[in-house]
Image (cartoon, rainbow, N blue to C red; front, side, top):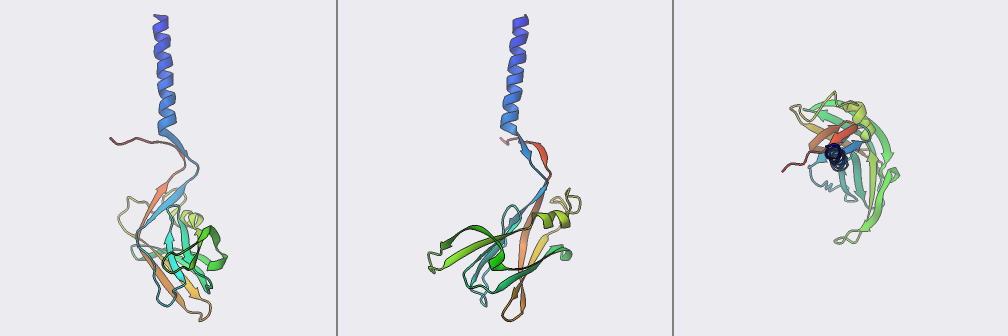
Length: 180
C-alpha cells in the first residue's frame, strides 16, 4: 500500500512539474502592447519618409531614405478625441535608435534606413503603471497623432494613427490555458 501511495505522489508531483513547465510563464514587468492597423504612411511632400508605425511592444518605427531633414517633435495620445497625454521628443529622425540593418527597396533600389523610438515609459506614464487609467475593456478608441517638423521650412505636419488597439499586461506569473 505504501508503494502505491509513493507512486501516486510521485506521479502527482511529476504532473505538477510538467504543468508548470508547459503552462506557467513569467512576464518580467508591467507593459503595454499596441496593435496598429492604420496602414502605410505615404506623404507626397516627403517621399523620403517611407513608413511610420508602431511595433507590438509600443516602439515607434520609422523608415526613411537619406537625406532626411525631419524632426520627431511630439506624440499626442488621444482617447475618444480627447488628448490624454503628450510625449515631447524633439529629435531628428536620423538621431533615433537603430532598429535593424538598412535594406535596399526592390522597386526603387533606394537604401531604406530603419529607426525606432521606445515609447513604453511614456505609455506607462500616460496610461498608468497598473493599467488603472485606461484598459482594453473600456468602450472607446485610441488615436495617436505624431507631430513631424520639417527643419527646412519649420512647418509641422501631423501623421494620424487612427486604428489603434492598446492592451495592458501586468508583470508576474501567468498561466497559459490553451483553447481546444
